[in-house]
Length: 597
Image 1: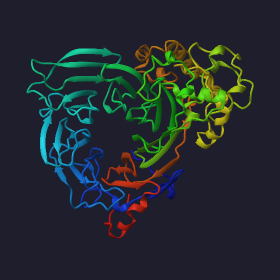
Image 2: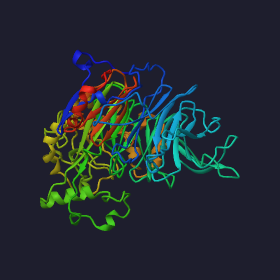
Image 3: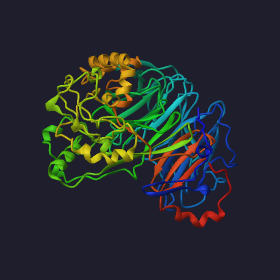
Image 4: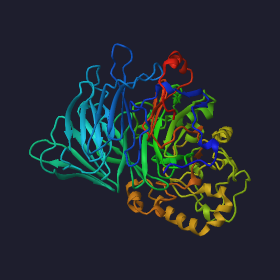
């Protein structure tokens, strides 16, 4: 479903791009692919995936790369920006018959220069554990496909474990395995362990311990991807039914949910501090979800087709902490908040409140993340504090609701099309035309220009509106006022959604109840906490959006000195970060010829 651009400029393959850090450059000599460098005929094949591991060998070049192309699996020394790739000498190469590799993952905990544990999932449902250094096939799980006979969509080691791993399938099931245990010769029998809204967890019933240890059934349709939180305690899953579900992994409990704007969700990742989750999918959007507040805080529109990978750039993301003594909340305020042992959950809001009241040192918060899609484009995004903390609710004046039924915008002409994130909440009189639903904040007008530079220009105005209260769970309909003409054209439809949203949001603190009411009908989820309308939350514009391949993109990985991308033709590309390209200039003369994508 790769979208073709309309003009010559759109169809030109970019070999460099510029951000505020400088110029990122494609290193053609660092391209990895099949040894013959011939573009792979990707029709009907599973996506090309890439996994990295560092084996800490004495040479100082301990990075190893694994990638699958069609029926083939390759394992190379990864030289990155330092030296040209030598494709003639793979450490290991495997060709499979009757099935194709779909995904893989290294165990970073046990990797050494002599041995690595690599899990490989397959299109027929099996999972193989191999050691590409010793060239041994250790074990084959689900060999007879008695546990699940559908395609493996994602496989990962459980963080901090040398033997546990998690596998998801297109059947919508997820299984926990222990590499030390067998799978048995008969189909497993299960006992219900826990059940919640749209998910259930079973244990395997047998006399002796066998795989799988647990079976999760999550949502409707395929489980497309999952990702563990940075501390390994929480698990974020995205499904073909369009839902993000976040679980407490050890307690086997649902923490929160989110619904896509349209279609299935295909990819998911966590911010480095575990406070935010980004998803991408068939709505062509990237969606930013707050783990603490369990709500959508922004969407990003830049892709012209499905988003296949999202990833945070840990090396560009920065959170400049204020002095711990500047917390304005008491310890009791934070005791019930879920956190990851870094900042307390709403400490950033506390620091912002403190800063606004005392003019203390500003807290600069910038999260960088990227996305690639079937439109062959790479997008980079900045999530800044004008989006993260645009306002806090006016809890003392919650006297307004049903704003969509108003016949005219409120006094204050700056609430209109083109208003930025800080478009002037002070000009709105909260006592005009109705009452605000209890528990719902009164948000600031939202960006209509979808322009980050414009939003940044309005940041100072938005910060004036910051209050000393914590963010409430609900999402009001206030932003609809900023598009009066649209409201007039769609009055009846909006009116219907508004009333259904009001009924559901009155119980917004009970996320499970809300999921029960809205789990299958998109018309009922739109406009709720699960799936806010487009005009209800900020819409990000990408910092850059560049066509970098001829075929759909399937890989995006940020590492210290470069960005790695891959397309379905089987080419793995290295983009040197600003200032890093000089390290490899001496190798340009001897670089092998190949297709630049």
